[in-house]
Length: 356
Image (cartoon, rainbow, N blue to C red; front, side, top):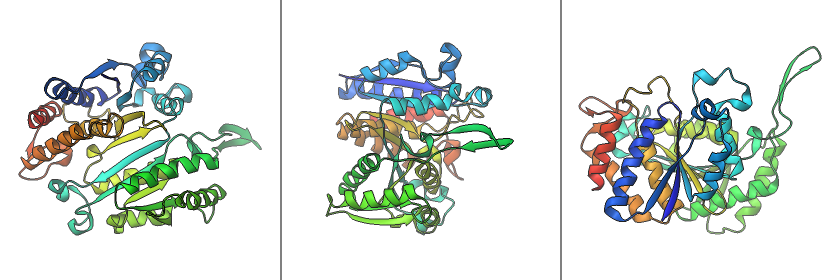
């Protein structure tokens, strides 16, 4: 039996996680999944109850589980806290503590939602790319960092740092994923001005020697951002650093029509994973039954595929999402004229019905 830690978090996190749990309960009852769920705290809700955005109990429980399903963290009410107490520090902390270095962010355009994209249909139709983002290094974690007084004025510093071993392992992750896809990797950097990116490019070339069946190309990050909008289907797998991956994956998400449709996986070397939608906590719509739960439900699918070796059940979830979209049901964020708009809870029920 798999043991999964459920971390609803903040904002819409509780609502979307509730729909994912419906799907898991259905698979447990009707398909012998055998998934045991335990619940924990992270983010702002954890701070309110424990004084920490990442309680020690959450970390201990996480290490006893096989994977994590996360909702979202953050909210305006915690923005005035000291940096180390803010909800986002809980998310960064659990990634670091569990060494979840490989962040997989697929950008897939469902054919039923082609008109939801802001780009022309011929540009995005059939889009299926994977962004592999290094998640526990780079400028988000590098030292020195902080704000200080220097020469009589405030001075801020963050350090973009990578060891070659950190670059190599995310490279291997990207190449291995590409071997199961179209066998093309585009490494994104800023090697023309940043020494850390010169090293990134050198190490990617070295790693590529282990994968002669995979084509490696390089692209500067500003060009990559432009090309994602101009011709996104040219990419198969993109691999990049923490900061660049954060930005590019959100850009790629909007190509699909809504950030509410895209799941993600964060894996360590043993394929232990934390799975979450890539959207935020959206506190402005929390409690209104309008949040899109599909990215969270699809995160369960990724969990089944990448960490729990249950590809057939992952396929069932994906097929159910397609069925519901074919039937014309939409949450508000992905709706168009003629669609049947449903709430968060109803969308979860529709997916369960399609699975069963």
